[in-house]
Amino acid sequence: MGFGAGHIGLDHQDEKQIDYLLNEILDFGINLIDTARGYGQSEERIGKFLSHRRQDTVLSTKVGYSIPGYEDWSSGIITAGIDHALKLLKTDYLDIVHLHSCDKEILERGEVIEALLAAKQAGKIRAAAYSGENEGLQYAVDLQVFDSIECSVNIFELNSLKQQVKQAKEQGMGVIAKRPIANAPWRYDTRPVGEYVEPYWERMQQLTLPRDYPLNELALR
Image 1 (spheres, helix red, strand yellow):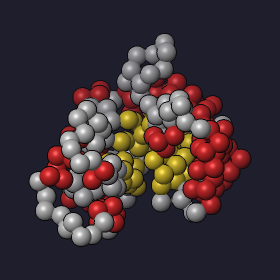
Image 2 (tube, helix red, strand yellow; image 1 turned 60 degrees about the vertical axis):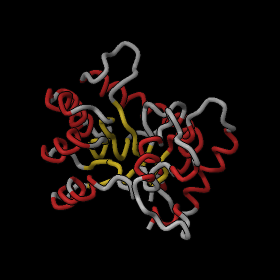
Image 3 (tube, helix red, strand yellow; image 1 turned 90 degrees about the vertical axis):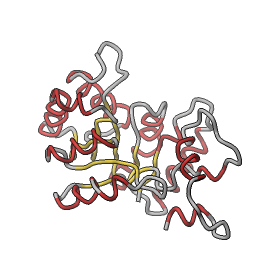
Image 4 (tube, one colour; image 1 turned 180 degrees about the vertical axis):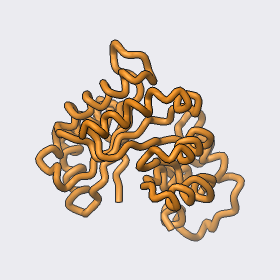
């Protein structure tokens, strides 16, 4: 079971609470911590508060952008992103590293995949992975060079479950199912314009869901 660590990267958050939260997560047996270069202070805080429990933790992160001095989605930024994550997370290796939602066209160029596989060959990472949806996800699965994928699987987004997740399983790939409760759109009585959850809110309006059953429980089931 995993914890999506995009929730712990904001500047204003209380670090004592984050320390408590992360260690409670491990105590409850949730051992996969999924973070990314784009999650603010998330990687740094995981390293700060969980490095002493490295053997209890499966660390997953994502790279491909936002390293000063490197072009986004170049081979150099993949290597630099992995090295930076190793430093922030205070570890000698990363269990899973994803190319973070890059387009099919970037995958087709090949250089980011080669850099990711080179990091695996060097022992910096254990699993080379792709995180994304739709055409990019399908292309990544079809290539059969990735060890794992990460994609949305929830009550309002089932396409990947029907196609790419099934195919990945047949090929022996790992799968991380993200957004399992679809960012909880039922929190909003009106359209959450501009919020990350807005597309799921729109889809929720088109479905007939049992209102006498807690929607968070329904989504998890």
